[in-house]
Length: 322
Image 1 (cartoon, rainbow, N blue to C red):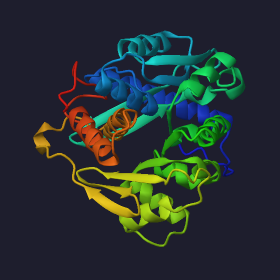
Image 2 (image 1 turned 60 degrees about the vertical axis):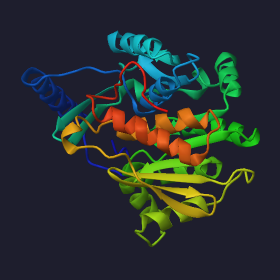
Image 3 (image 1 turned 90 degrees about the vertical axis):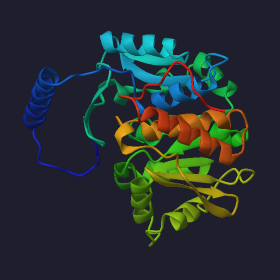
C-alpha cells in the first residue's frame, strides 16, 4: 500500500506474478477458513457508525467514493442503503470495486487490500458536478481519511478550502504510518485546513518523526500538531490520538487531556479491525449535534467498544448509549 515515488527495477511481469500469487493465496485462505463478507472502507465505516449512533433522521451522512460496475459495487450500494447512508458513488469500468481481506488471529489482525476502484476517483467527473457539489455545500461537518491523499488530494483541498472559507468543521485522519512517510507533501498542503485531526499512537509517532518534532511523548506530539499553521483562526485545531486500550489523548483548549477508554474483558474482544473507524464515527455523531469535545470522545469510546465485540465493523440494531 506504500505507493511511493521511489524508483525500482520491477518489471510488469513481476507485478502480474505478484498479483497472481496474491489472488491464489487469497483463494486458498477462503477455502480453508470461515469467511464473512462485510461492506466497508475506512471512511464508509465511520459514516455508517455515525448514522447508527444518530439513528434518525436517516441519511444525515452523505458519502462520496468510487466503485466498479460489478457485484461488489452493487453490494456496497445495498449496504449503504440499509445503513441509511446517502451514498453517491462515482461508478467506472476501469477497475473492479475494491476489496480487503482481514485475517483475524486472537486480538491481532492482518490486512491485504486490493484498492482497485478506490484509486480511480476523479474530481472533475464526480466532485465537480453541480449536483454533487451542492451536497458538499449543504454539509456542516466534513470527514476524509488520510488514505484518500493517495488518490485525489485535489478533491480534499477543494472540500477543505470550502469548509475553511465558510467556517465549517473539516476533519481528517492520519490513517496509517505510510501516509506521513510517503505522502507527506499532500498531507501538509491540507493540514492548514484541518480543524480536527484523528490518529492512533503509531500514526502519531510516525507523523512526529517525519515533521522533526524530536519527541516521542504523545501529549507533546498532540500539542505540537495543534500548533501547526492554520488557515481558519476562528477555530482552534483539535487533535485526538487513540491508543488502543490506553487513554485517548486530546487537546482541549490549550491543554492536553487524557480520556480513559471503557473497560472490556480481553475474552470479549472478537475483532479490533475497524475500532479506529468506529471511534471516529461515534465522535462525529456527537459533533454534528454540537456536543462538547468530552462528549464526542465518550461517544467515540462507546462505538469502538461495541464494534470490537463483533466480527467486522458491524453493530446491533440500535445503540445502548445515553
